[in-house]
Amino acid sequence: MTVVQQKKTAQRIGFKTGEFIVYPAHGVGQIVNIEEQEVAGHKLELFVIDFQKDKMRLKVPVAKATAIGMRKLSETDYVDRALKVVQGRARIKRTMWSRRAQEYDAKINSGDLISISEVVRDLFRADNQPEQSYSERQLYEAALDRMAREISAVNKMSETEAVRLIEVNLAKGPKRGAKADADADADADVIIEDEREEAA
Image (cartoon, rainbow, N blue to C red; front, side, top):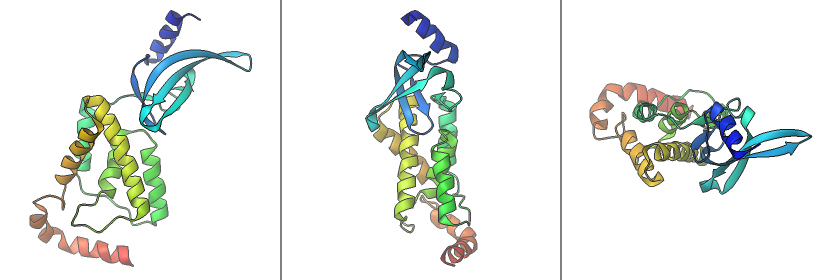
């Protein structure tokens, strides 16, 4: 198959060489090549995807790319929605941590920016809040990293700037910024009950 035919096949699926994509289990990567390999007597077209930050290269069969959830970068309006999500009130289920950790991990590996932003929102701790456990911190940082990588690729900014943008939006959320004191009176009963349940 010629390079022209390879490009045509890849474009039918909507992906092309040089493009940044999101792979659910690894986050943002770049398609560096489309190559053909013979596997068990069958010719297979593969996307060659580089994940520079992880120093990893992945080969994904073109035919299975969409089935495994590989997608284009989010549109800017979807990024804006994700940033609005992190401004919201944390929604933490009262289930065992191991169950919640599995749910957070599944959201991070879903590749969906909104789901990832929900994990960032739910696990974020402001300076005046209790410390995170080690496993909470690990999941928070994984979600923050995935979210920042996609925002940096979409908005063409550095990952550091993307993290700063996320943190600015987190600070706008309830109980996190300057208006925390004003809101505290209205929600004091709920917070105390929540803390008691957490401790129980």
